[in-house]
Length: 67
Image 1 (cartoon, rainbow, N blue to C red):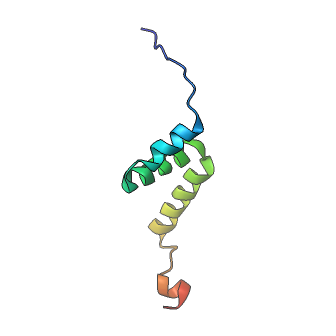
Image 2: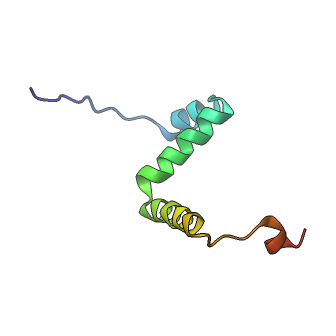
Image 3: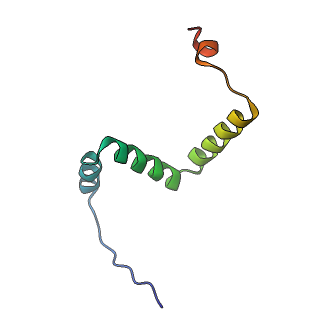
């Protein structure tokens, strides 16, 4: 079976308004998914942070900021 797609143009203003209308948690999740889908660097930074955490290469808030 062939997948059929309908192409349509959506003005950025429409997308911006739709994102603004999302609840905060939905908006944060959407933006994170968008970053992940469009930025290999973002995905690498997440993997690096998770690896750092797993291996104990982390510092406490107090160690970093002295409070």
